[in-house]
Length: 113
Image (cartoon, rainbow, N blue to C red; front, top):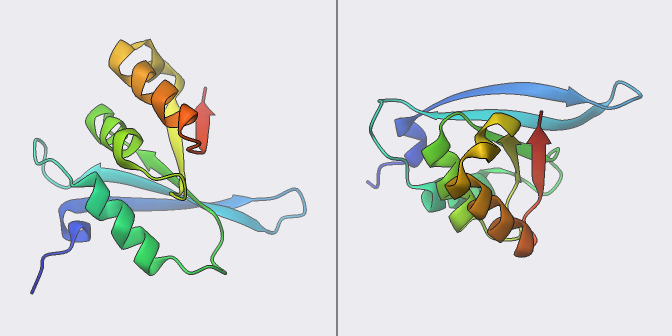
């Protein structure tokens, strides 16, 4: 049996409500379960794509580490869930470059400031 990437993560979520108090999306907080243990971002994205159904609300990924954010920005296809980018992390030139590249590929990004 192949080990799922979900077993190496700590996940949290928050519903995102629209103006009319209807569910507009889900924010999914993603962090490595053990510090220093890298997460296969591509595997995570494929797993979410398999589990998330077309009628499910939009998904916003909120990586909690800089490395996971960079990996998601580098590997996410255009059809991937939205990815949250904290404002304070944009001062890091590596992250800024990944954001620019991901934006140029058409990835949907949300600035958290």
